[in-house]
Structures are given as C-alpha cells and as structure tokens.
Image (cartoon, rainbow, N blue to C red):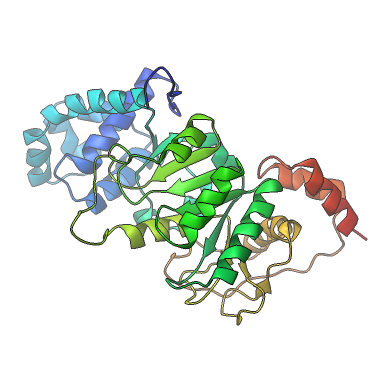
Length: 358
C-alpha cells in the first residue's frame, strides 16, 4: 500500500495521543519489562491513576519509581533502554503512513467486547489494525469449527454468514486455511464487510490482492493483538494461531458453533448459537434460526447480565447462561432503537422485526 492510496488510520486525532501511543508501544515491547508486568503497571499507575505514560517517561528516572510503582532494578532497566523511546515515535509514525494504526486499551476505539469477555490481565494493551476501525461498531459474529469440517457444514456456514452480513452484522474470521479461508473468499467476492484477525504483526503481513482492495475500499478490517513486527517461524506451525483464535472469540458479540469440539470460555454476555443438528452443550443451548434471532439475543443477554450484576468473568471459565423473562413484549420500534445502538440496522431487518412482533 502506498501513502497515495491508503487512508491513514487515526483513532488518536492529536500529536499528543500519538506520542502516548508510542510510549505504550515502547513500554510494552521494547522496555525490557515482561508484557504481563507492563500491563499491570499501565493498568494500575497509568489508566487507574489518570496519568499519561509519555509524560512520566519524559521525567527524570528518579520520578519513575514512585509514579509507576517500579522497583529500582526496573528503573535501571528502563533507563538503559530509554533511547529507544524516542525511536518509537518515528516507528509508530511510519506505520501510520503505511496505513497501520495502533489503538490503546484506554481509547474509545478499543473494542468494548474485549472489556466484557476478557479479564484485564488478558486484554492486549495495544491492537494494530489496517482498514476502517469503525466497522467494529457493527455487531461481530464469529463461526467456530473444529479442525475437520465437511463440505455441507462449510456451505451452511458461508451462506449463514452472508445472510447475517446482509442484515447489518460484521462477519469475523481468523486468517488461516480451512473454513475461514473459504468464508473470506466468498465475503470478498460478494463485497460484504469483514473483520479478519491476523496471527502475526501487521507490519510484516502482506494481504492478498483481493483482501487489500477490500481494505482500501473500507469493507475489510485487519486486526492483530501482536507486536506489529512479529513474524511467525517459517519452519513450523505458527505458535500464535491459538492465541489469535482466542482473541477472535473474545472480540465477537456472538458465536455460531459449526462443528465440535466446542470452545471453552462460553460466557453469559456472549450469545451462542448451534448449527441445526448439533448436540447442545453447557453455555450453548440455542439453535440458529435467522439473523433477527441473533440481533434479538444481543439485546436480551446484556440485559440479563446486568440484572444479575454479573462480575468480570474469566474468559477460560465456562458459565451457565443467565436468562430473564420479559414482562411484556417490546414494541418493534423500541427493539429497532436498541439495535441501532449496536450499529446500523438495514431496512430489511427492521421489516423482519416488525413482522415477528405479536
């Protein structure tokens, strides 16, 4: 992609925010601290204390110990690598010029689903992306299947996701062979919206021509929770694929289970639907019917979780689904208004919702 054709992503909108993002990048990946420790410090002493990391790091090292809760050894480690902080500004700016953006955990563009489905220590500090980040305003739906999936299940999944996309949802996929590759090819051919999780850094990922064209046109979004320059080993399987799959599951508003084995980590806040004919499982008892059913559940499940004062549930721990009984059916226009808060609601979906109401 060239700067002449690629719209530069900018969730920050100001040089000060760009400097803060560069400081986060350096702190997470180049400061010498373990990533888990960097997350802990940022959560407690930057986000929790309402401070700016860039401002603190530009102070004398003597200030860091108190402001960031660092040990003397950690202060010494950061001081040794401080020169890289200035280089990080240029690196992040260069990625911006190439069309690669970074969004921090404390920014509005950071996906809200990650805050619901992941504990703080499991959330990525930074996400890199290429494309229109506003696509995440649409409710994201992720199909999940085992390693082996037959042609019938693949055909059903592709048709179902195209139907869901036409009704105003965002199909999610992981960049890997098999079901997701077939789904992505068809979505691109139909010019449908798509968010694709990439199991490597976006600065080293080269999308195929059709995917690149969709990104340039604003129909596709590439996302990665990994360091932008991280590349998978060439001689063996990508060790980050399982982590990318877990991230995609947490990113989704709802899941569609296509074939066993079923995933762990099904939570009350994340509606789950089964391909018709599959055995039910704990946390997923509903068979998929149509897109309207998915949108309806996206309204009802958050309300149930709020009524139960649901805590921040660990993503790894399966939980029983909570339900509530509505005292009276919602007016169709009220439903449509609630759905609009999730994203754009096409006219066809509005008509289907009105027809479903008694």
